[in-house]
Image 1 (spheres, rainbow, N blue to C red):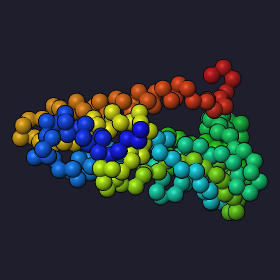
Image 2: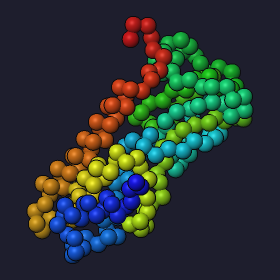
Image 3: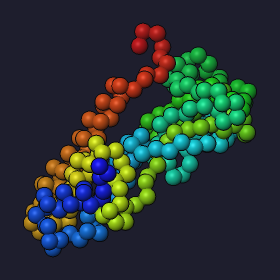
Image 4: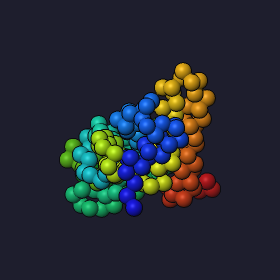
Length: 213
């Protein structure tokens, strides 16, 4: 069964004891939901992705398109179709400290990136100005405009989204001193995302590392 925007905002409205929509309109709760989806995609780029050709610039330093939220994977070269593997940045640097100054190539062998800069990545060997790769990266889905619109994220994110909507709603309703509830539900949203991230890190393949690590 497809989860809709109304399923999430309706659950939140029930918990807010506002079935008659006296305090929060449908558009307002849906706005909170859209905000929560955008925030979730920014924190976890792998939750909503696309696969597309990324044209590289000359050298090792590369950047994803401006509408991306973060890199998930570089799959293969666009021209030769040869695969590209992730590698630990320290291992790559240790093996060849002068690789940034090496000869450029249309075919990339490895990539590495720092999660603190999710839209940037490095390639080896340095890319030529005609190089392009197939990449998987996060994007933000189109805004939900009606309660019948399908929820774009995996079903497992339904509960965290309800928490986010509740947090934003309680934040507005400060006359009833609901700031404690706002904090509680925002923390619940963050905790749910953190738990999912930890599980994904545990189960995800590890990149090449130095012996003994």
